[in-house]
Image (cartoon, rainbow, N blue to C red; front, side, top):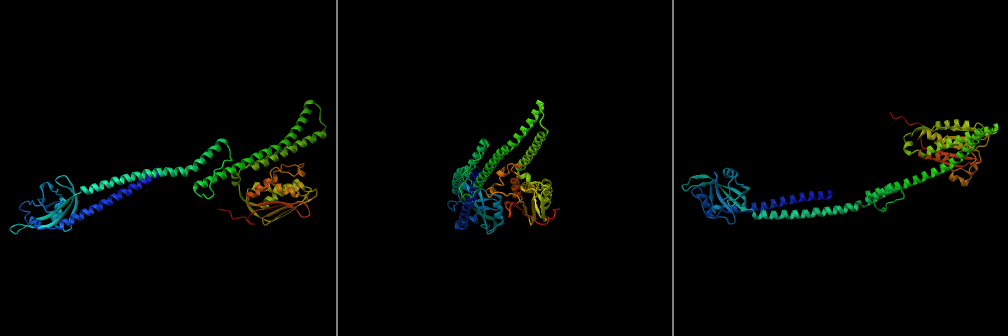
Length: 460
């Protein structure tokens, strides 16, 4: 409808303009013919001019025209049939009285009701038979506009028909183009409705590789969105399955220990004090493990938007020092050597400190009793090296996977999410983290974060 309306407006403007141009050209031609006719001054016209003040003159002068002499007071000296007189207007009288040489064109009506084009041309003063000067007289010549109006009417009809055909054709073409252009949008709408109805994220809209229009870009964006949602959904399902598997073991052990304690109370058979303390210690350890696992799951489930709101400039040196204090409490028998230099990064403070704590916890956990942990921060590179048994080469590609734990470390406490959280936090801060074998044994963790040795000035 919009296309048809736009075309209709354009066609109407062109048609009206064309009609007025043709009308002007036809009138120019008629005016030129009238001007040429008025310039022909045969002898009988001169006689009529000389005798116009005395009596009407009934001899026709111009064929196929209406012609008459008019005095400045409006008196008409007919040169043709009296029925063929042209109505005299006040403008004609003023033109004759002014006695200009240019002439005056107008549209008028003849005595028989015919629409005519009129030229009023002043001829000057008349002369009476006695030789006296009479009033000014003008020649009024008119020609019928019947032929001209007929031509204009036919042109208007033709333009109207052509315009109508053009508007209808434009509407049909616009409808066809709109349907063709919106067909991909219909497919996209159907795909969205299908996803909303079935939650099937494997739907893809076919897009030509070389297509670069807006609909193609929208289709590609939709395909990318559904792919991302499908991947996120799969990761969510995997996380739920892994979390359920990891929760099952401590919950089962916790339930068993609590049932033993409850049965002892119900039956009145006391558990030996040493066994009772061991059960309570086990319950406490399992509760701690569950709390740690739930905290790790909450950390992994947080959205990117929640993280982005807390990002700020953080001193990595301060985060490492805080993590070192906690590590020394967890491994009092270990020697922890630290060499830290200032370095500022953009990250979430709590998440960054948690990531450093997880790295140090692993170093403390796998270090032998009385061993040494070496921590160094230089130029935005944080290295943490332990002297433990190290990680087998075939297990290095999996250390950052969720819930992955080395078979040799399954007896140790932990959920298998610590290094996964480290990798995600470092990646969100724009850095990289790697684990590798250390020379002489043990494992070295390397974290590289972009930043600067000095804090940027605060924005006022």
